[in-house]
Image (tube, rainbow, N blue to C red; front, side, top):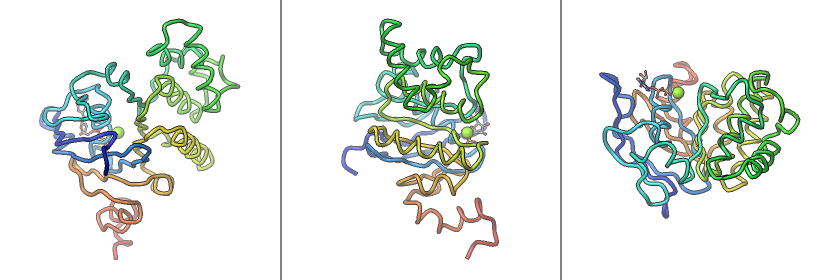
Length: 242
Ligand SMILES: Nc1ncnc2c1ncn2[C@@H]1O[C@H](COP(=O)(O)OP(=O)(O)O)[C@@H](O)[C@H]1O
Ligand SMILES: [Mg+2]
């Protein structure tokens, strides 16, 4: 891989006696959609928190565009171009869609008018134009996910971390979400996404990293991943293992 956008090198993180991430290393190329796969507790969200600067790793380092970002903090990571959504939606409930997205836009915008312009564009891109002035808590579940993405997009990320953004949606809603992910990539945004539903994830991604009990189990293209006995066992059940 020529000059990766993101390089994760030997990242380890424990919470008390729980080893959430153990010596994780991989790289992500600009323009890639990378899937992060693994059962509950595998360390996916913890790794997102580390990449986004929300928590510090115990060991290892993260390079973004060749510069070290581990330890610089969440706001600095956002300024460098790392955006993220949360597994548990974190909108400001009583604020409108527009106001929520403006919070993201204020990372760069100095004035309200500029933040509002930027937010309005991102809202339209995310298919929420008709919901602009609706309070966040009134949104349907898929629109809440869109709002999470819109707020992250307003920070102008070059790398976007999507944590289970399609979980709990109907198949139709999930398909619409997949299209949004494709649209994001077409905008030049590199994406790492955590998703449990393999039928949704595999057609979308270029490559996957599989985590289990905090460790990297394997890394490869979707076609390679689905052939791996451990992945088959975990996601399809014992009877599918050849
Ligand atoms: N902030 C935290 N404080 C304490 N324990 C945590 C924290 N984040 C993650 N963990 C623990 O680390 C392990 C991995 O969690 P997580 O990264 O959320 O897994 P996943 O997202 O793959 O389901 C779990 O055992 C979880 O309880
Ligand atoms: Mg998680």
